[in-house]
Amino acid sequence: MYLKVLGSALIIAATSGIGYWYSREFQKHLNELQYLRQMFIMIYGEIRYTQESFGEVFSHLEKQLKEPYAEWFRNMAENIQNRSRTSFSELWGEAIDRCLRISHLKKEDLAELKDLGAQMGYLDADTQLGVLKLYTEKLEIRIQTIRTGLAAKKRLCNCLGIMSGIFIAIILV
Amino acid sequence: MAGGTRTEQITRVLPKSIRNLMDRQAIQFEPLQEIRLRTGQPLFLISAGQEIMPKQDGRHYQVTREDIRETLQYISHYSLYAYENEIKQGFITIEGGHRVGMTGKAIIEQEKVKNIKHISSINIRVSHEITGCADQIIPYLVHNKQICHTLIISPPRCGKTTLLRDLIRQISDGNEYLQGCTVGVVDERSEIGGCYQGVAQNQIGKRTDVLDCCPKAEGMIMLIRSMGPQVIAVDEIGNSEEIHALEYALHCGCKILATVHGTSMEELRKKPFFEQLVGEQRFERYVVLSNRGKAGQVEGIYDEGGRRCI
Image 1 (cartoon, each protein chain N blue to C red):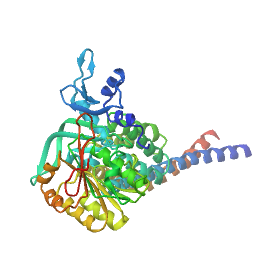
Image 2 (cartoon, chains in turn green, brown):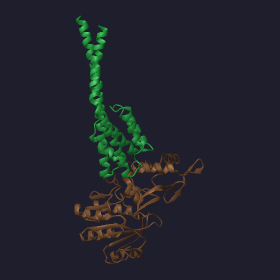
Image 3 (cartoon, helix red, strand yellow):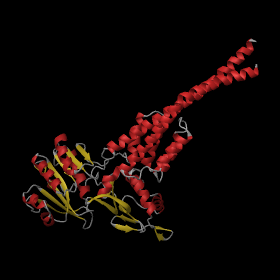
């Protein structure tokens, strides 16, 4: 009997843990998007204020960022300095693939971020700033959408975790 | 050198196809003066005064639109927006002080050039630092252990910036003719110091302060107010604002080292604004350069009255 109770408790604890982990992932995704927006606001500000090239902007900002974003910017600054690719979008895409795989951003976030690279580097200052602003606004809308449904999703994950644990325990016992 | 060696600085901005071509043909970078790219035309290299047209598969290499686009990406660090002002003037200065000139279709706004689009020609002018090239003339530019107000007169590509740079270095460090003194350089095109991220890449002396990428007229006044230089050096003066700033500096007790485009004292006297400067004997020495025989050939040194010293 004791063993059954112990087994059931372990199952419920494990599934609850999985549910909690999923709910934390939703929160982390939101946090990463917020951090990304903050980064682009910083890039926008640096370019507007100093009109520095991307290499210098990345080189300045990497010191203020957390990993893996610092690594991403470091990588970009080095590759721009070495002119290792023929276009900015190639450098940008490669650096995203190399450095941001371990972030909590989703595939669609990374795809959108990569697409942004095609609109950078060859424009005049006003248009370049416009492109960065537009991307920041898109991020803002995405953050709002995720934030709206976040509490419900987290609750759902937690409940499903516990309920599935109870369900499995009943079936097994 | 933060921006790498001269060869690295130049090869880094060339499109991959031209880099490979130059590698295959073992082109020497040391004597290289210019690299000219024109869309649909052969690639021209000017080396030690000679034109070279590299060949690929038995024919002269033809520069493509893609080569020009790639070069623009490299010289602007993939950030054309950051070089709008430079492109408007027709050139960008890259690491090491090398000047990249460009032409295309000018965009005009309110009768002024706003930008250049459809860039079709690029000319990379390699900066040459020749330490000691001012050795021969410096005794003539010093009076009572002090440098004289000096104007270097030279046509383009005759080494006036190179000479100015070495003069700055010698005045700043000091030598047997004069004690080292504080030199303020207004380096509007980053050609004198070849600054990279604010730090001079060329040897311009230990007592030299460089105001990089700053308009000359504004820069001279800023330097006087902020750094108290004993000598102010500027390259290629010409317009009225620059002449006014120069006069202001002369009245502040600073010694002036400047360069101007021209071929002789006679031509200088005919130039607007300079006629008065020469007449009022504002400059104490004039150095006239040419490229007869070799670049940087000193044609003559004149005193304030226009009398020939050598």
